Length: 393
Image 1 (cartoon, helix red, strand yellow):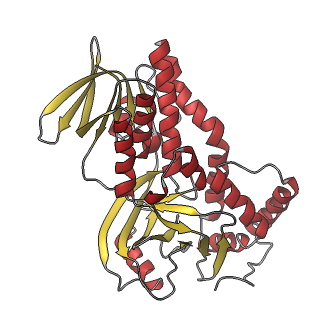
Image 2: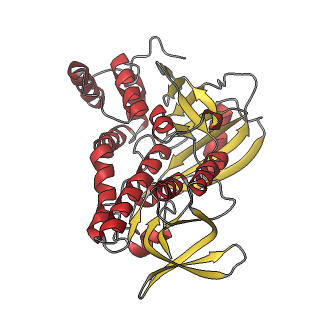
């Protein structure tokens, strides 16, 4: 009999399992072996601080972000006073699972099948040898990723969440050319992605090159090949290819009102516009663990709703702003051209990166906010011509 049974061992599930085990509860962490989540791998300083990520897991430290417009013009944005850490999900996720185990969580390898209820809640799962097993638990945390089987079976709305599909190729990092191992390139170009963006992210000895889209019929592999060609990366050795869905918005409800709560991609907590997921997955896992602890101590099923309310109270406004930005600027190449032009503004750069690095909307510079709001409106209305003086290219 477990106090908590966590389904999914990515950053969200591993964080929830660690927090619960650290608090003294008997925890199981179920994960499929051998799967590497397709991911750009960026984690901001707040994630490193909040979740005690050791420096040895940081395979690259990014100090510049390059925004590339549909016309190939670029804005280089320096990350002042810090860096964005890049991690390899294969090693990063395993570290988090092992850390949960060190706190006392029981690691199980297998695949979730279903939940059965009688006198006790039973999680039915299949182990790696194909044997069906049953584990009793007082509370279940579904952290099994986008298109979560747990969410679909247990939580209202879990079948209806919209997605984009992300695809990337891990390549050997080039030693020459325009590639910069301390720079992330974000490419806003309808020929690469008609509704999202493409990217080239450094990972030390390797690099992640990919794109995302929610438009049916887009050839993700061809778009990535085109991006590699445009970036001078065609000749680099391809080490692996990966694809996965990315949810576009948080679910309206994360719990089943009885004995289960969702976390991470299963709850839809990927940031709009940027597609950033690692920090928010870990924050969602911590929120789910907090709600589960409240439920385990009180026995009140309504306490499970704390997970969503806590998360959205802190991050909901950021998600709302980012969603508005994506809806406004990702509709066409003309809009994307204007968006990259707007990123040239120093006030936009400072406020955007402070929000990204620290995961909060900056409220200390009202005049700058007003200035940005006016510029944003003028760009959207086409009253301002894109300006490119002083750009990176």
